[in-house]
Length: 138
Length: 138
DNA sequence: TCATTATATTACTAAATAGTAGTTTCAGCT
DNA sequence: AGCTGAAACTACTATTTAGTAATATAATGA
Image 1 (cartoon, chains in turn red, brown, green, cyan):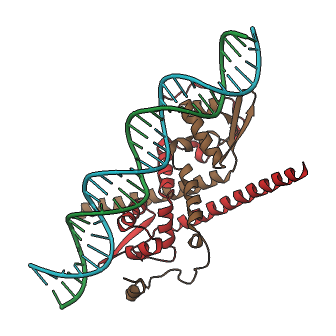
Image 2 (image 1 turned 135 degrees about the horizontal axis):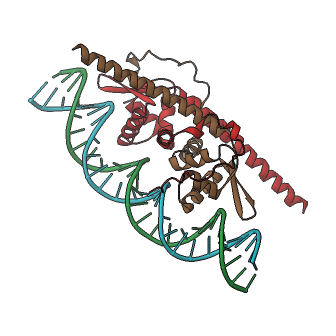
Image 3 (image 1 turned 90 degrees about the horizontal axis):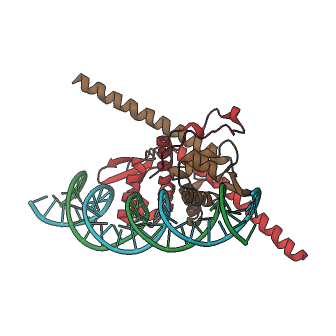
C-alpha cells in the first residue's frame, strides 16, 4: 500500500526547526492510527446521539433507543463500539444493561469542536455578507 | 415500556442530574452531523500524517508526499478534504501549492486526545499487571 | 511552441461499515 | 419447565471511501 519511506529526503528546509519540540509531530504511525480510530468512533451522528443520551447519567438500552429513535440492533452495535473504545462502560442490573460515559473528556472534546465549528460558520456568514455588499455596490 | 416506569431501579448514582443546563445534549441532529463530519476528517491516519507534516509551517504537495510516503493522487485528495473542512488552507505560489493548517485548534485537539489515550493505556496496563499478580497468588 | 514539473481530476477496485431482519441468549417471573 | 421482555449476535445489503493508474490542467523555462 504505502510506498517505502523516503527518509533520505533533506528536511533541512525547516522553517521552525527550533520549535520541533513536542506534540503531534513526533507521533509514530501506530499512534496516529490509534488517534484516528478514536476520532472514527465519534465520526458517526448516531453514536454522538447515543453519547448525548448518556450525558445526564447511565441509561439502559431501551432508554437509549427511545431517546435516539435508532433500531435496537443498531444501538447495540454502536454501544459495543463505544465500549470497546473505552468511551462508554457497561453495567448489568438484572435484565437491563446500563451504559454510561466512562470518560467525561468526551464531552469536553465535543464542546470544543462545537465552539470551533460555530466560529467557523460565523466567519463564513460574514464573508457571505461581505460578498452581498460588494454585489450591491457594483 | 416507558422510561419512567424503570425509574424505581437504584440508579440513584446520578452524578449530575441537576446540571442539565448546556453542552452537547441540546444539539440538533443537524449539528451532530456537522460534528460527526468534522471528526470524520480526522479519523484517517493518512490525513493525520498530512496534518503532522504541516505542523511546522506551510508545505507544498511534494513536500507532503515526501514526508508521508503517500501517493500523489491520494495526498491531493486528502488535502482537498482537509481544505473543504476548513482545517487546512491553500495558497498557490507559482507552480507550487502550499498548504497550511488554517486552525491551530486541530493540534490542541490532537494533543488532548493523545493524552487521554495514553492515560487509558496506562490504566489498561495496570489492570493487566493486577491480573498477572492474581495469577501468581493462586 | 514545446518540454518539464507540479498539482488536480477521473474512473475504478477493494475494503470498511451503517443499518436491518431474524435469531439467540439471558434474567426474572409464575 | 415455560413465558416474557431486554439485549446481543448473525448474516446480509447498500453505501461510503481509501488508494491507485491514467489523464488533464497549469505554470515555468528553453
